[in-house]
Image (cartoon, rainbow, N blue to C red; front, side):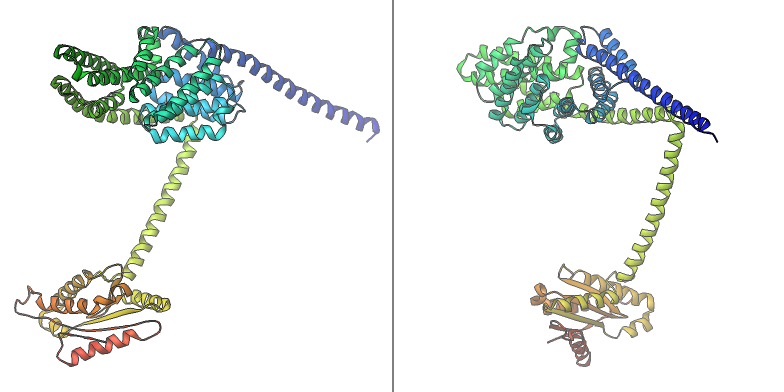
Length: 551
């Protein structure tokens, strides 16, 4: 091959490599610019308010879903879009989609470099748990968020204020009102530093509502009233979409705080006012409670309603029979409705899982079949392993326990004896033999003999404790190993067994008396305690039977 040919081959080879490399470079450059362009679209979507009607919300959800179908998004943008989609789904009461989107958001954000937005997802989950009064789970989410970054180091002011507010709510529910007030004030301090004109007003309202709750709990009712009055005429109450969107974080907490305030005011001034004034205030409490209950029941906030009414019943007892009657009636209904709602929630969750499974099946049928096949193999393997384990357990148990008396076997006796001998602790042995048992078998049959053995096994088993173990030693012989803590009672135990057996009545011969010969002995280490007890047993037999011999 000539040099020119070799040169041409190298030129062609490197040209192909260069073309492939250039195509790859162009591809990645296009992806980069697409991600930059899409990032601007993401920012525009997230900057846009959700609007004042459901059409705007639905439109934004469609835009998010369309953008998510493109693969040209950074992990951060994917996570933030899924987080916004989860918020929309939550407000539209699409709970299964909420969990799906919030979980996906967390997945992508944990792979991004932006820990602030990852923290925000954990805070959203904590918020969800708090509104379902699962405080421990909420604290776990907050702890997971703090593990990523100290809240003091969060750069995003909105997320930072949110984090302090969540800590404040946890403190309120844990009845630590001083700490709660500090957190809410810290949150407000962060809000005051921001000038984005996007979240500040609503976040201030949310903080004020919880501060009103703190003031009411700590007896500062005038400050509580001041905070509540500040937001009483807010557009959030009257604009349908805003009311729904802020139901969880502002509307429900506001109603709760005002219910507590009205109850506290009613009790505080009950003894200082005329009957007419008292009745008027109590009627105001009833009216506002009705308004709050209707709000909760219309929006599936029965847990908040139940929590609030139970707190009122416990902490603000009233002599007004109307209020008492209303509370009892509503609480009874709530218990029933909560039970039904839980059943409905479980059914909805199951239905959502089924739909999701069907969707996954349609999208990736081959992968699903492989998964099913692997699952079947795993189940069959698990079942086979279970059968093997059960067989081994049955074999093990049959080796350990006598089939008739259900006492431990001779083999276990030998093992336990060797073990206690090695411990060098003092122990005792009780050896038992049924007197003239062969005559019972010969006269009444082996079935009657088995009844005698079983009955004695029951009497012996009644004596067992953590320090006393019983065994069928062989045939009509039985043994007990007595630990050191039970040694003071060894003679009484043997006497009790001897007496109990003598007192037994037998269906196959009501006049028959069956007795025991028993020998006991104590010792430790390598002393042949079994032989000593056995010798005492035979001494009992040789000296009249139906007796206990001890050394």
